[in-house]
Image 1 (cartoon, one colour):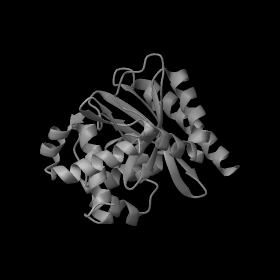
Image 2: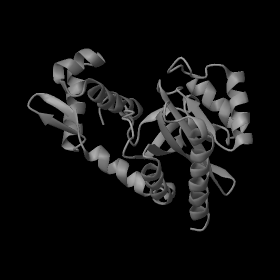
Image 3: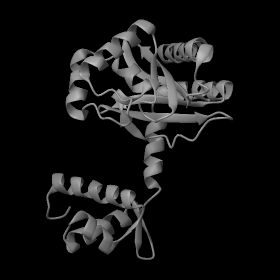
Length: 251
């Protein structure tokens, strides 16, 4: 522990790690300038993180260590939803050729638990572990639609209604109407709210009366249209979510 105290030290440690990620690797002087931190304090944190394997040094440049991947993968493997949901996500990607994923809610964010790409899937720049606002995408809205009003209020107060594209929902009354439609329809849609030119459909996964996550198919607007978008893909998703729900309930 440094002289900063335990709480401040923990906060500073993660600031250092996030800075190195943001800079895609950085030298000591770059970090001093970026963080505005005393050199002696930064030096202590870097040496400690390096000794723990959290950072690696390539010459004079610090990078975040792969050890974080080990922790993340262990955490993911311990989730029942990942265990039973991944085979369905893989099957959806193979059957549709598109981008399929599984999302959960954590601390008010949407977190992708796993991703599978079909043979014609576009590169959306997404990866397992990426965090996105729940209000700006199909799986996030599918999850929100099955949370109680108090929890929805808490998430909106904390995270707001960010505008990621021109089609993102930024009005609370519009969001409330959208969530009502999702409950009635049984699934959520996203028409370029997260990524311009990309549409997605998502079905909620509800087990034991609680929302567990959402499974999604996404792709280019031109392929996500007509009967395929309105009927075929929703049916595939609802079938997949039902199988996941049953597997969770019987374990």
